[in-house]
Image (cartoon, rainbow, N blue to C red; front, side, top):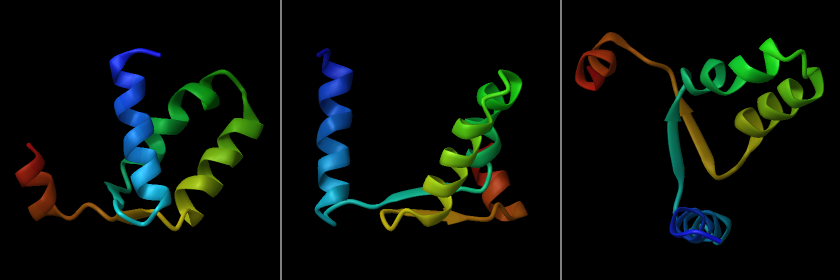
Length: 72
């Protein structure tokens, strides 16, 4: 396992133990779905939608103009 994978594993364990919460924007969904949609992987598309919409350790916020400007 490389260093990147080890770091990700630690972050996900912290999330699983409610010590860390993922926060993302509504833009994450189209970013994640591009490849499976392009490849016709409907099962993967549905799994991603379910995970991102229902996971307790992930908060998704809508992008408003103030946030978009700060992100730029």
